Length: 227
Image 1: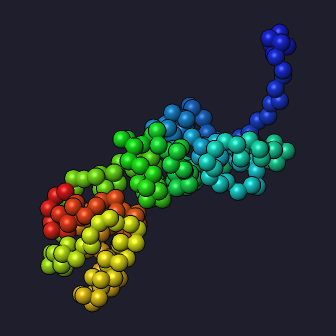
Image 2: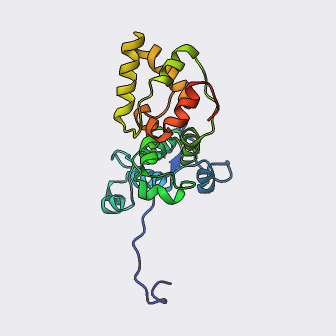
Image 3: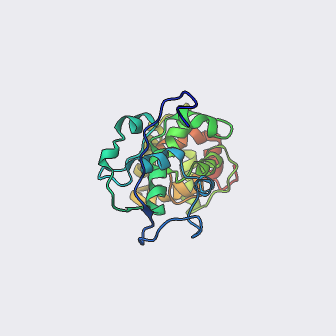
């Protein structure tokens, strides 16, 4: 057929049989995952490619930022004949690691309202899927209702907010001043601030989030107002 089309005949190779984590075969009849289902779950296409390029080999499966490093290193001679195990959990973890290393230029067109490179670099390390970026965009842009833990301390914290402009150094400068004034350290110092500013127990580094939130919203939230 290729000859009739006056085209070069490609080299073909087959991956070994894929089985699930329990050793069962994957098939459409068994209801195994399709590429469409993986896409709907937010699994990154580059993660799927990175996994398939290494399945059946002894090579480590690592996240990539483009297909180039995969194309350059694929060697079918390294693919064994034994069945290769496919783990949905491993793929989800690889997909998250792919996002954590993804440059802003690669993510920009997929982010709603283009929140900017500083936002992406601040939140990407905490994403399981790209859709999770929306959660942190809401935290940064608001409005959110703060969770108040010790209103008196938070009112003092609001009064001690430094003047803008803010940078990543602002968080340390501000919390150091609060610690000196209140005697608080560790969780007693940081947890009420994070809850008030983000309404969440954990997330991206506050040093990176605080300048994105800005003084006006930070002050309102520390005082218990939706902002």
